[in-house]
Image 1 (cartoon, one colour):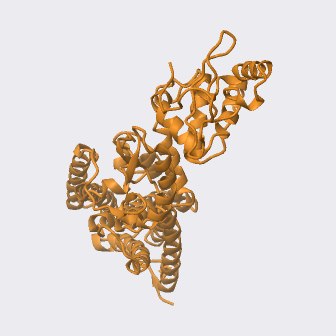
Image 2 (tube, helix red, strand yellow):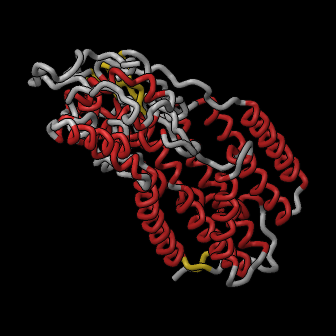
Image 3 (spheres, helix red, strand yellow):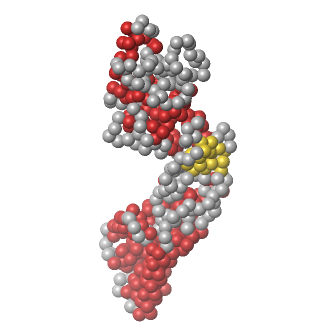
Length: 474
């Protein structure tokens, strides 16, 4: 068995094969975890393979450190030229990039079988390749400078910690690590210019490290001069990268829409969620009909856009198509209809209306008046609730709801029942006792309450009280 600089060729081949297999498996697992669930878009694939570098990069660095450790032991005391010095690290880079290409190929085969929106970003793939090259060269240099059995795992852990810190950092630091930023928003797209600047930075610092190490090993001044030029190139890339503003506005896209029973429009990569979103928001649209927030169109917006409901349009956020995504989108939209009322009883009444709009069980709350209001509101028919919301929508939005809007509260209900019994009336005729009944004229012992519009099948009998038109009594 021939020895190649102290390492057998067979050993090198086996190590390279194992490394490619491990990197491919890790790359697929890591990319799958980064993929936005349910999204059919090429940008999603590119963002996933770049995100996989968080796992594959440290493994590549550890492999490069192990080979460098063996190589230095074999070359101890020998004079090497430039080509002999750089041949081994370049071979490692080639092996690592081969595994990256295999990962991209597997994901691409999967995606071409389905209809994908957008386009494949070659600069994005270039960022992934340049990032893996940097990981490998860092591992090589660490393994060479610290020739002990510990550097390979330390090189991997160190790279993981360094690039994780950069990627999770605030401000400019996150732009130095290969990535697209998280959370990734499909509406922002992938900036080819930003990717190009990132490639210049990553290749510049990679070349500077490799040539700097080569100059140290070969003691050639010309190589050191080229290393300094690579440093300048890396600096130019960083300057352009930091000067590049982050996307402030979403790019224009052609929505994928479903027209019935209401119009629902999502990003074309999320068209698989049209039916579920439509089913969820059709119920909300029917309950908001006739109010200032009534809508007939649901439209997905970028994640950083504030949800501002307007007449005829319901803007929503859809982060992915994982289980429950439609319920999450409807919850967020309903919450945007009215601001919270912290520290006031109106917040409990607001939650009752919110729960009804979302189709959830009505919350009782810790206070008796809220429990009474929930019981009172649950006794209304669906038609009556919609008419109630039309009458009092402005109070709902402005934290103006009170017990008067919900039958007057427990005290008013008890007083009305006592009055009814004393007058020989039916117990169910008291205001607030049965939803849909006419209010009794205000007396000194009862609290004035707001009426409820009768249901479609209700016909007022003689003597039941005044007209129940949808207006607010004063």
